[in-house]
Image (cartoon, rainbow, N blue to C red; front, side):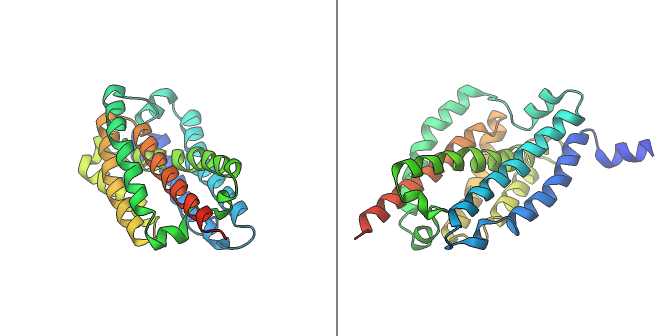
Amino acid sequence: MGAWLEEAFGPDPALALSYLWLAAALALLATVLHFRRQAGSPSESAAVRRYFASFFGLGLVVPCLIALLVSSDAPAVLASWGWTFGRHGLGLAMLAAAVPLAVLASAVGSRDPGMVRMYPLAKGACGSRREFLLYEASYVVLYYLPWEFVFRGLLFLPLVPSIGFIPALALQTMISTLLHIGHPDCEIFAAAGAGLMFGVLAWLTGSFVYGFVIHAAAGIATDTFLCRRRRKERP
């Protein structure tokens, strides 16, 4: 039995258990917990907040707890999952080049009619500056952080040594792109490109942190452009 368990779970039981957990968690997040079930309703903002909190709890907190409870060297395991600044010199240089491009791409993308209808996910965020800042803070911490941890960290970096860079890159890109089904077409294509780019960045730096900053900058910029447009269009 011991030999079978060792073969089944591999050299990293925390990773194996986290993958089993993510299979269920991502299914829940894409269905019964998804904010689209209440899109356009008076409770839309609350639904989006619950979705963010669910993503944070299911996608980030639980896998990290698994690592802390199961691993004999949890800090090393978490670092192998991308919880490190890694090659920070390269990472900072990439941020300096990529963040302005992400903001520019958001300015262009925000003109797409599908993006106008979709974002911000909680339309009430455009109501006031305070609401916008609180919404974006929760968006960054509760959604973008676990998103990048799951796809460019947990589902990518630990797999590279075992299955190779290209297969691991393709796998996380496929899954993250599929979770954009129902979003505007331009965003689905952008998700595929970003999955490849952020994966390469994570591999080069050994961290998902830099992709997280770029992704969050693009999302905040998109919401900013769209909220400004909504306020200008009010009678």
